[in-house]
Length: 489
Image (cartoon, rainbow, N blue to C red; front, side):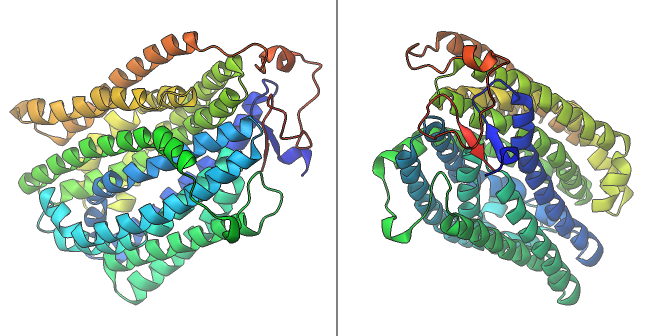
C-alpha cells in the first residue's frame, strides 16, 4: 500500500490532514446520497402527481424512527472495530466483522417485513393528510423491502470506515446512486409509476450498494479483517459489546425520530388548516437542510472513529486534539453551505416544489434551522466524544432529556397556544433543543475526560508523536504495535 493511502489515526503529526482524508469521502458519500434522494423528489416534482413530493417527505420521520434504532448498532460495530484496530487485535476484529454482518441481515429482514406490513397503520397514526396517505403508503411499503440491503451496506461500510477506509463505500454509493437515478427516469417517466417507481428504484439501488460492499470485503485480501463463509460465526461476546456500545446510539436516534414524528404530526395538523402545500414546503426545506447536516455529521463521525482508535491505543491527549480539530472542520462545513442556501433559498426551494405558497412555507422554516445548524453540529461532536471514551448510555440520556424531551414539551405545551401555532415556531424548537443538549454534553464530557486515566506503562502518550523529528507512521508499520493505528484506504 502506498504512503499516500495511509491514514494515521493516533499520531498528532498531520492530524488535520488525516481527518480531512478520512472525512472527505464520507462527506461526499452523504452528499451524493442526498443528491440522489433529491433527484427522486425532482423527478416526482416534474413527472409525478401533484403532491408526490409531500407524500415522500412525510414518510421520512417514520422511516428514521423505525430504522435508526437498529442502524445505531452499526455505530457500536464501528466503535468496537476501531478499538480493535487501534490495539492491533486482528482476531478480535475478525470476530466483530462476522458478528456485525450477521446482525445486519437478521435485523434488516425483520424491519423490512414489519415495516412493509404496517406502513398504512403508522401513517394513519401520524395523521397524514388524506390527500397524501395513499401515495405515502405506496412509497413506504416498497421502501421497506429494500431495508435489509440498506442495513447490510451500512454495517459493512461502518466496518470499513472503522479502519479508515472511507473511499470504497463512497465508490459503491456513487455507482448505486447513478443506477438509482437512471432507474428513476425509467420507472417514473417511461412507466408512469410515480412514487412507487421512486421507491422501487431506491430499493434496487440499495441492493446494488450492499452487494458491491459485501463482495469487496469477501474478495479483498490484505484487509485488517476478512470474510470467509466457512469461518462465519456469531460471537455472543462481540454481539453483546456491539449492542452495549451501539444500542444507546440507536435509542437516541429513535428518540430523536419520535420527536420528529411528533413534529411531522404537528405539520400534518397544520396542513389540514393550510393545505397540502405546507407539507410540500416543509419537505423541500428539510431536504435542503439535509446537505448542511450531512456535511457536519460526516466531520463529527471523525470523533468517534479517531477518538475510539486513540482510546484503544491509550492516547488521551490525542482524543482531545481530535475533538478540537473536528469542531473547526464542523464550523467550516456549516458556514459555507449555509451561506449559499440562505442566499438562494427561494430558488433552491423552487427546484422541489412548484407553487409560491409551498415556497413560502419552506422559507418560514429554513432560516431557523440552516442558519443555526452549527449548534446541532456541536451537539453531535460531544455526543460522539462521550461514546469514543466508553460512555454509551450517558449521551442517550442527555439527548433524550435535552432534545427529545424538550421538543415533546414544546409540541404539547407551547405549540397549541395560538401565537405559537405555526410552522415557524415549530422550526424554532430545533435550535433551542440543540443548544440545551450541546451544552449538557460538553459539560459531562469535560468532567469525565478529566477523570479518564490510562496506565502510563501502556499508554501511547503524545510525547513521541509531538516530536517533530519523529518519522511518519506509514502503512508498513506492524498492526501489533498498540501505539499507532495506520489506516489503509
